[in-house]
Length: 89
Figure 1 (tube, rainbow, N blue to C red):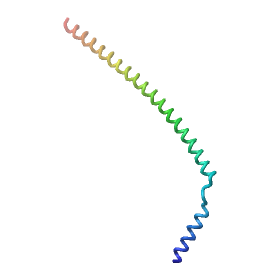
Figure 2 (figure 1 turned 30 degrees about the vertical axis):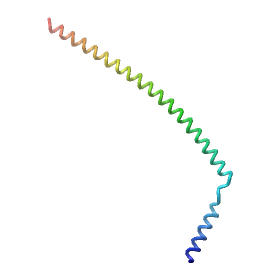
Figure 3 (figure 1 turned 90 degrees about the vertical axis):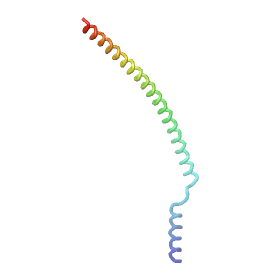
Figure 4 (figure 1 turned 180 degrees about the horizontal axis):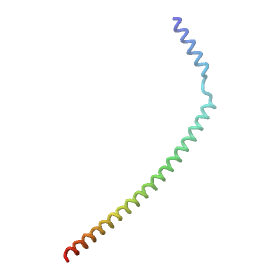
């Protein structure tokens, strides 16, 4: 029984020491949350724009690589024809 009373006194003292959040504290936290929401929204928008630019550049790079591969294939074909022609002589 004494342990329970002592424990209750300690819990009561801790509750009184920490106190309760006041309305101004809650309003302050709400303004911080709203500011963070706005910042996150702006960051998401920037990330989407960056993502779109990166996708556009990747598509452009892929097209350039495909053109280069086609040029290389054309050059190889020309060299093969030249080699075969020289072997025929």
